[in-house]
Image (cartoon, rainbow, N blue to C red):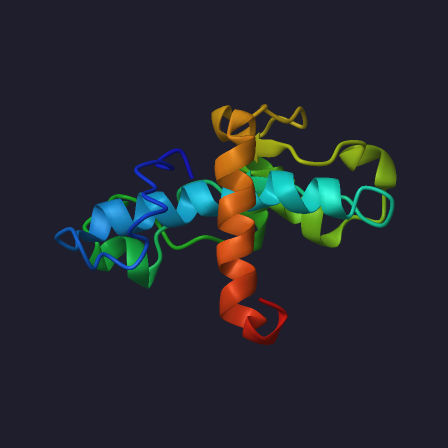
Amino acid sequence: SNWAGDLDLNDVHFKRRLYDNDTAYRQSKQCNRMMTVVWSKVLQDVAWVNACHPGDPRTTLSVDLGYNLWSSPPSRGMIERESPIPFLCGLSDDNAILETTGGWFEGPSQNPRRCSFRKYDEDSQRLFDLCESFCCPQMK
C-alpha cells in the first residue's frame, strides 16, 4: 500500500497511544514492506520474496473504512489489465517476470520500486525479532 508508515516499534499494540484505524493500517503496511526485505535476505538462496500493491479495488474493508466508494468490485480481468503484478506474482510460471527479490511492485509496472523502508535495517531486524517472539516464544 502507498499508505505505509507511522510504525512505532515501541508500541505496536497501541498500549501507550490512542488507537487509530488509519495509523494501524499504515503501520501494518510498513511492516509488510519491511518484512519483505528481511525475508528476501533470509531466503535469498531459496525463494524470491516481493511485496506488491494490488491496485484499488472496492472491498468490504475499503468501503467500511470509507475508501474506494467509487470503484466497482474487482474482476480477474480488471486485475490482469490494471494491476498485473499481483496476478503475475501469484500465478505466473514465467520466472523471468520476477528476477528480483525484496522489491515492492505497484500498478502495471513490472519494475520493482525500492521501498524507502528498506534502509531501516536495525528497525527491520527488531521487527523480525518481535514477530519471531510472537510465533516462537520458546526460542527466546
